Figure 1: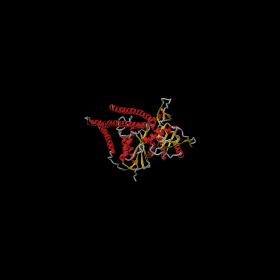
Figure 2 (figure 1 turned 30 degrees about the horizontal axis):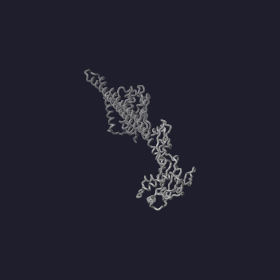
Figure 3 (figure 1 turned 90 degrees about the horizontal axis):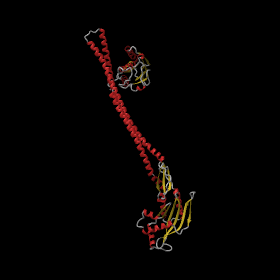
Length: 548
């Protein structure tokens, strides 16, 4: 037995080591996962600002790429009325456009005549949005010098002088010539057609007759404060500000994380400034970490479950080994005792001394009783095996319950005179069953009641009654030592024995297991109600088949 316990402890230690290992792995995995999640959130804080920039600048990019080039569709014939209408739609769709200045420009030979392409301003109109969101406009006087106009005029002269009129100008050529982007201001000159560029070049070179061509130039004054900041990642950025590029915050707190990205185009002198407290990002890290932690926990639980199943299997195997070991020991004892008694009795009978008739009868009785014990044990083992292997069949016969029960009670009264037995049969007389199998149930339950009872309280009451659902109930109630609650689920297991003072002389643990197999074989069930030191009640339920 010491060797068995050593094996058990060694395997149990292995399970404990396994649990410690996966627990440590689980904790390390959580720390690593949290660290990686925290690093990932910090990296996103630095990289996702591009998404905010794209969404914030989306209206501006649409305005720059689509709405401004619409001026070219007018081919220079945009007047003050149509310019006002165009400005109204721009103010409505793009709140960051504060003012629009419209230049009605003519192109031809200079007045007075001079070499080169003459570019002149005919009139200037300015449009703006009032506080009530209505539009206002005014015609402005033409100044003697105008920086924006002079710059665009020089670009146009250079383009006309060197343009390849055999093809359309590239986007880069258009951008460099017809756009002038400055902080909070964009100036645009409508793009002439190739035929017009050819005419402009002839005029520029003085080989064409003087004539006048219409061009339109517009200057858009921008308001960066009207640009709507779109926070596409509120989980990362708590505060987003629009600040000048030269902005340097005075507050450099270690409890805050910041980043920035410059705007483009007409807002190039401004940047988006992102700021979040560290605990804000910690909350986001925790939110993202929860699913990962749950997954790691599931893996951990799965591994613990595997460990528990291994341990349970090991425990069951060890218990089964112990049961089998005890079964062999007890079975050996059960066989050895009768065989020893038979051998002693046989030796006395073969002895030289003459035995009296009384001695001969005594030894004959001993031989007969011990042979019955061996026969009963062998019969029980054989029957158990046959029932488990389904190698026998139920032989139904009509059984009179009154006679059947009384017969067993009379037999036990003779066998055990100190065993108090009584019975009651309620509203049922005959039914069809296998009397041998039913008799084995009666015999085992009655033997157990006598064996596991205090010598002064050896009594049993048997009750037979019609049950529900066309069943018949057999109740065997004794006043024995009872069964502890923790033993209830094990008493019907093969080779299982409850350790107590009443089975110290040996038991193979087959009695109740044999009863359960018999009842199940007869398509019934057996249950038990018991209290320690008060007694037990075994209830056998069998399908009722009447004799009619």
